[in-house]
Length: 113
Image (cartoon, rainbow, N blue to C red):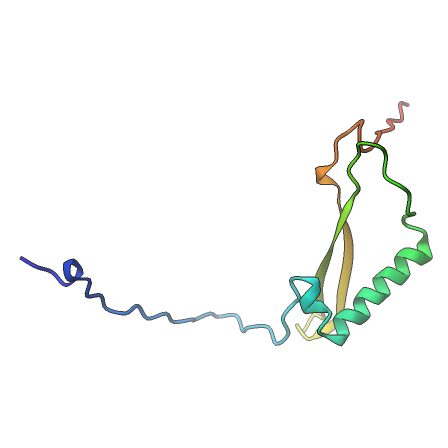
């Protein structure tokens, strides 16, 4: 007996997208390249950098010898009101410290009480 699948004859799959939740009207940026194309994301990134500089959150120093500098990544979120309408665009610059090694890249100072 010869079947259709043995002869590479397949019925095309139908994909139906059914959800009880509506799709968002605005999509969050997933990378800096996407964010730089939209003025509201550029504004959010500018506000984040201004806040970091204003509060003195970090200072630029030369890396230690044989140490890894801390990289960073932009995170983008749409803040919404209780009625699910868009309130504002929020951009965060976060440090990627997971690739550092204790004692080489940083020294942990423990406070004993």
